[in-house]
Length: 118
Ligand SMILES: [Zn+2]
Image 1: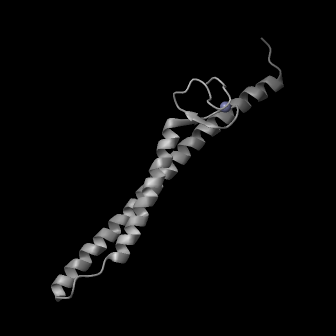
Image 2 (image 1 turned 90 degrees about the vertical axis):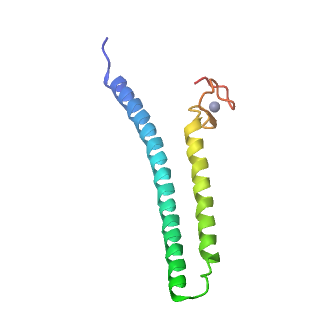
Image 3 (image 1 turned 135 degrees about the vertical axis):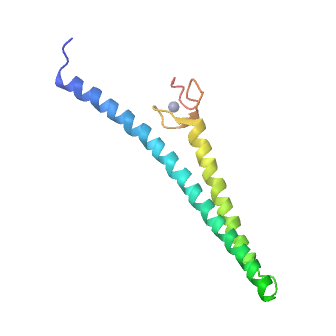
């Protein structure tokens, strides 16, 4: 079968779109994973600093250091991680309807919003 140039252009275009969409999702996934790793690293640094503070205060016979500010920062960072993990779970379990753009569950056979079959 002969294909004219427009057919070839259309097929190449569709493939490029599919690849771009897939790598876009993978990139988003990796970005969130990295952000979680980064925040967890910050938390670990604060924990290490707290341990050092306790050691120093014992060594010098000082009163126990006040960690309330550091604990608040840790709480805030833990909340951020929870939010990011929710985003990750959403990326893993959902897919976007190609027709209406609404989110559907990964194993849905039809879009709950517009009825498009997947
Ligand atoms: Zn839909």
